[in-house]
Amino acid sequence: MIEIKHVSKWYGTTQVLDDCSTDIAHGEVVVVCGPSGSGKSTLIKTVNGLEPFQKGEIIVDGVSVGARDTNLPKLRARIGMVFQSFELFPHLSVTQNLVLAQVKVLGRSQEEAAARAVSLLDRVGLRAHQDKFPGQLSGGQQQRVAIARALAMDPVAMLFDEPTSALDPEMVNEVLDVMVDLASEGMTMMVVTHEMGFARKVADRVIFMDMGKIVEDCTKDEFFGDLEARSERARLFLSKIL
Ligand code: ADP
Ligand code: MG
Image (cartoon, rainbow, N blue to C red; front, top):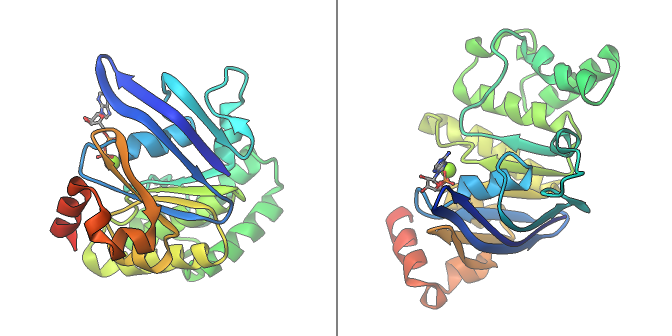
């Protein structure tokens, strides 16, 4: 589903991605972790064309992200992205947040989009809040709306960049629970997170990044179960967060 091949990126003369390669199969859940500044956000943003890269190739569902003739808005519509900050439209109701892009980008009718919105809000447990505005919701609720909004576009894959790190601790699990459900339904997911409980529960693979490089790319069992075989940087990182 997602092929990342020898991707390198520089900001000016500073290299932020260094020959990164990995493949994410249909239905696979890959957790990306690593120290701050290691390139996790940059890597995940290259996948849906939010960040250009100078070397290598990324292919999502058969479409080359970096190719000049690729229709990026169309590609982006097919890849759901959820950020640390919820980025909902503050002046639109919860339902309208979910309806807008369905109508504008996918050309769905208002009725069809609203029906899809309601069913997704049901799924994330927020149907009762459909007419509220984002500012009237808790952070955890807003993030669940953001996930539902991404799902409304029927994405082929979902990218998450630290979706719970801006939340108060008591709200982390309600968001992770939605993500666990998604994973168990077979969604292809690339998740930047330091929630190792989530990784243990649903990840098929764990990628560890350091200084722009993919240092570890292994199964969850290898990552957590065979620490001796991990790189020194990965062990140090795990010793700080586990
Ligand atoms: P992470 O998500 O792992 O914390 P990032 O992908 O955000 O790391 O950043 C990787 C590196 O790229 C960092 O050294 C950061 O300072 C640098 N960087 C990120 N965005 C920019 C930018 N717009 N201009 C210059 N450097 C940047
Ligand atoms: Mg980041």
